[in-house]
Length: 320
Ligand SMILES: NC(=O)c1ccc[n+]([C@@H]2O[C@H](COP(=O)([O-])OP(=O)(O)OC[C@H]3O[C@@H](n4cnc5c(N)ncnc54)[C@H](O)[C@@H]3O)[C@@H](O)[C@H]2O)c1
Image 1 (tube, rainbow, N blue to C red):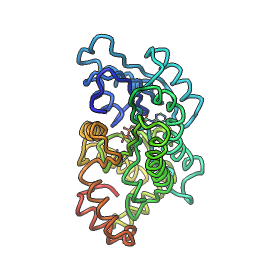
Image 2: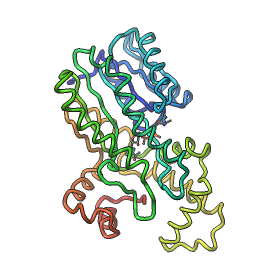
Image 3: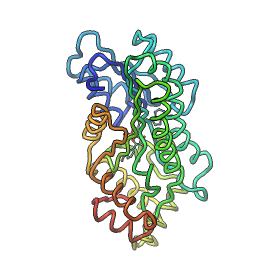
Image 4: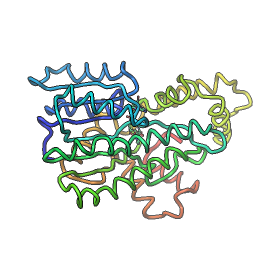
């Protein structure tokens, strides 16, 4: 798809981060956008930002509250879209919504684990199922599924359990890669890309805590894990109160957002350029490119401390 003007795009998780920036850039190119999110307030802000520049005559930006892990809510989103965008087809589907957390089979609850998995994997799967008939009706269409570097490297560092997110992101990558041929065989006018961002400056850490714990604060299990991680890092945890640990947790979310090598706007541009160039695998950021090379070069080493140390040095990551 060479340009987006006059097309209709669906974006899941359009309330903040990369979803918001995708919406803004698509609208700036004259594309109609229908977004969903669990936060109506954040979507209203995205819509306002999209409309700051005067919208071309007749361009539509619609917002729809829907949880991507619940099929009935996605179907309601689809029905609202058909009515409000006055269409029976869409051209672009960005399955972007995602959260972290629920990383351990030992210290996370089953509910937390499955929430992350069901949003990050289930949201992509159900998104494709729900919107495929509308995509198929367009002359040309493109599905863009957001995985992560955790779709080919199942870790964020030696001190953190990361099973639910990694399992989901590997699933998104495998599904998207297999979908390329399923589409080629059955709907060749529909293309598919998998997006694998490195560290992008968004509020995903605090947003995930809001969804998993109902607040910005670490849950009791996360507090305990953070203590263990800080101890392994050589910090004097014995002298640190729970509030000291909470403060570092809040700071970690801020550092993740404010000190990333790639901004959400830069990420959205890389993704949209990748779609225009018809690339099926879209790595986002120099860190993602480098990590991809390193995992391919030394797969057996990928989960060792030495690999992690040389990787963080090479890509300049401050997380882990
Ligand atoms: N930020 C990174 O470093 C990074 C790296 C790799 C992959 N990713 C992936 O990129 C995607 C976008 O993340 P982001 O960093 O922009 O985060 P973000 O938190 O800024 O945006 C995600 C949006 O999804 C929404 N959301 C969460 N659960 C939802 C649900 N059940 N239904 C509908 N909407 C829901 C959130 O409310 C939020 O608005 C995610 O899939 C994430 O896993 C992010």
